[in-house]
Length: 299
Image 1 (cartoon, one colour):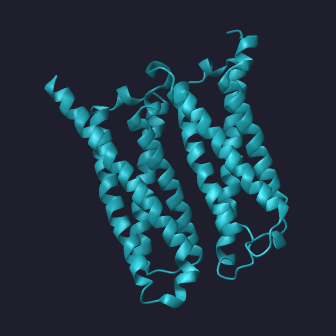
Image 2 (tube, rainbow, N blue to C red):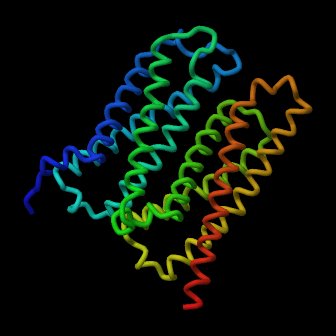
Image 3 (tube, one colour):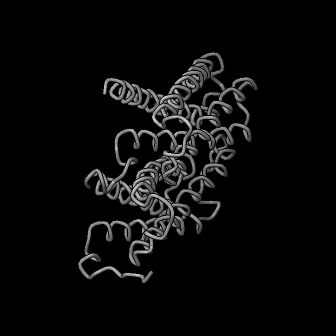
C-alpha cells in the first residue's frame, strides 16, 4: 500500500501544531532536568530520601510521552497509522489525556519535592515552566480531540472512556507512591500490603481494559463487554474504598506522631488526594455502567 503524505493544508491544522508543541516542550523539559546538578536539587533532609524516586518518575513521564507523541506525529504525517492493528482514534485520545494527567502530576511533583526551595536556580525554574507548558500542550490536544465528532474520537473520547483514563492515571501514581514507601518505610506492614495489592489489582484491570479497547477485542469476550466493565468498576470501587480509608487512617495517625509529620506528609497527602480522585472516577464509571446495562435490558 503506498504511503500518502499530508496535503499542505494539513500542516496548518490545529492537531499538527499541538503535537509539534508537545514534542518540543517535552524534549526541552527532560533536557533541562537531565542537565541539573545535585546542588540545584532540594537540600531538605526530610525530602532527600524521596527525590530519587520522584525524579525518576518525572523523567520517565516526559521521555515516555515525548516518544509516544513523536511516533504519533510521524505516523500521522505519513498516514501510516492505517496499517497498525490498533484503534488509532482511541490511541490518540488515550495518549493525549493520559499525557496531560501525567505531565500535570510531574509539574506538581517537580517544584514541590525535587526543586530546591532555599535557593532559586534558573534551570529548575525553566524546567518547571516547560513542564507546565507541556501539560497545556497535551490538554489542548485533548480538547481538540474531544470536540471532534463521536465517530472520530472513539470510545476513549466519551465520558466512560475518560474515566478509565483517570483510573489508569491513578493506578500509575499509586505504584509510584508504593515504591517510594517501600524505599522509605513510614507505615505498618499490613497497610503497605493491603494498599499495594489493591492498587496493583486495579492497575492490572485498567491495563487489560485499555488493551481490549485499543485492540478492538471487545467482540471476542465470552460475556458482553459492558458486563465486564461493570464488574471491573465494582471491584475498583471496593478496593479503592479500602485504600482510601487506610490513607485517611495514616493522616489521623499524624496527630499522635507530630514529630514525623514533616518526614512523611508529602507522600501521604499525595496518596490520599489521588486515591480520592480515583475512587470518585470508579464510582461515576460504575454508575455509567449500571445505567447502560439498565437501558439495554429495557430495550
